[in-house]
Length: 226
Image (cartoon, helix red, strand yellow):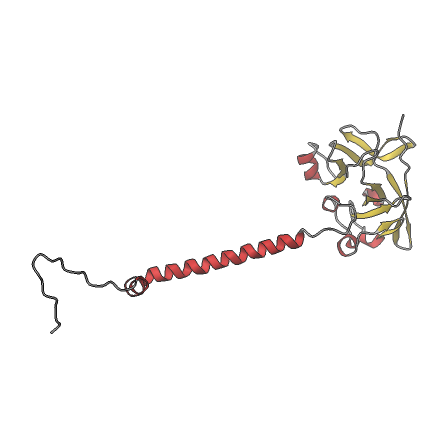
């Protein structure tokens, strides 16, 4: 028989001591205990994901190699294998293999080194009918970097419906068609202006094919019309 505390008239009876909260949850509510464990596990997983994202962002923000930035030239056409697997070539000199430029609108970014040592972003494009054309991506008499824009980008960024990629100037929203010739200071040159306004088509870079390689040589002289 258990002893009980006698009741004294006029004196409130002291309540029985409560068990510890964690012991009470474990004994009386196992579901609550599991919920708390899941919350701890979920919080740890979220923290791990945040740390991984911060680490990835830090790695991708590393400074480049000092070469001119190429915006979206590769996305407009089919990039060559050289563009995918090799460093950006420098001209004058070989810039691509013929075997890697088989499809229409294949592209190969490269850098053209000027006589004063400046490096200009440039682009080789395989046009319809198997023709190759190379241009400087720096707008003539300006500093904006042009781009080879695909059909969707031409529609969204330049408000132009076109059946194939064209050269776009994101600063002036001028569009040049490499399949057509436009007037330049030294005569007709590829890159007729089909939208917007510009002084002339992009500066051409001479290319030749030799022993299965496409070689870029001299850049067209930028003669400003008075």
